[in-house]
Image (cartoon, rainbow, N blue to C red; front, top):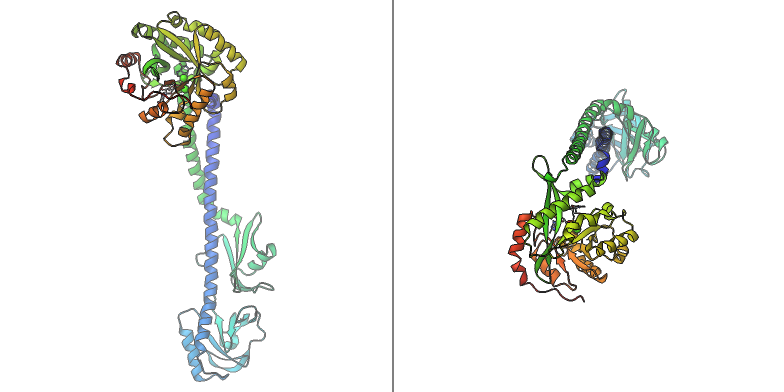
Length: 539
Ligand code: C2E
Ligand code: CA
Ligand code: CA
């Protein structure tokens, strides 16, 4: 992350990042808007289709209920006044059907509106007969003049001695303007008979696709039939019409997405500017006055004493706030300033430690060395002041595995450091991807288990792996330091574990502190820890 950010420090790159971030945020938010708009449109189409279909079916069901009620008329093929009376009663029911008819010997004899017809009217062969449409016969586009409705055409349904004229259902109500719809009666083959809506739409869809959706650049269409009935609904969305009717929304969405993208890109740019401003400020002010050394105690499990410390760097920003190394070490590495910084650090630590630590107290001091500096011959030279008084200090350098270090070279360096009295620790052992086999072949003096093991919550996988990691470090025959011990339970667990842990470092012993607090800690010691059980022998 830090390295990627480094690419964007240059203002020219920041402009590109801004444009890119704007484009990505705009396209993403506009895509989300379009998807939700289309899903709304899809929902509108589906619900409108279902509504129209159920309206169409509801009328057929109402007709069937009317037929059921009329079945109680005494048998016979003659239209009596009592029959006409019952037809009228049926047509007054508030179900939308107003015209019931009585059929005798295949001809309509009387209707609820006209009473007894002057002459029986034959309906001829049905367009859809009983076999296809359950118990019903259907006629479409019948001239209703003979039944007293001059110049009108309609659909007739017949079951046994009774028939109805189906009322027209208006399906324009609530219809979105970009949606075309047609209701038809269709037994599954042959010609579809228009019921309402836009005539011919069902046939056009049918020609495009037998079942389901059909797509083209200008229209999206679908035919839906209700299983077990002969009612179907065709819908078609005209894409230009949909776009035209959505222009207002589209314009609003463009403005909104542009504002959102501008805001997001602005935040990213502000972050990069802050970040780059920090880098410039840090490099300008990388002076000994702003450097702070923090000392974190290392606890020896055998002697139950603090026998050393790790020196950790901090930088005091111009506003007085303390900046932690994860923020500035990558900058130093990128700018090739790491060695100069380490030199400053070691000098400061030497001044503080040699001046304040009681002369009769022996301490091991650990410094973190960046992989790119580890191979440089200057390291022993930097540490000379400490090496000059071995009765007070011994020194170790901590290195993290890195592809910048070739193992053959590393081994030579470790040996040459050892010859000068400097120990080497492998830091962050087990973190990320480590080539454990290579690490095992290095003759380092100790390994520091990565703090993620000891800091893992109880019973988590990482916590379970802590013992294995200790055993593994033990198997390669090195001293073991466990970092990140924050609780007494973890400390006791390590002391009672199957393998001895030689050193422990972590907030439970002490946080990294300034030199005065560190020396106070040395003076006060760790009496509470003396009572704890001694580490076991490795199983
Ligand atoms: P590190 O070498 O693994 O150092 C230990 C880090 O773990 C320190 O963070 C320390 O404060 C933290 N730590 C120790 N015990 C605990 C604990 O019980 N709980 C928690 N939550 N944290 C604990 P810090 O000081 O922020 O240092 C971060 C890293 O920066 C160090 O990791 C080291 O790799 C690097 N670093 C620090 N100072 C220097 C330096 O002078 N030179 C170089 N090259 N790297 C440095
Ligand atoms: Ca370290
Ligand atoms: Ca570490």
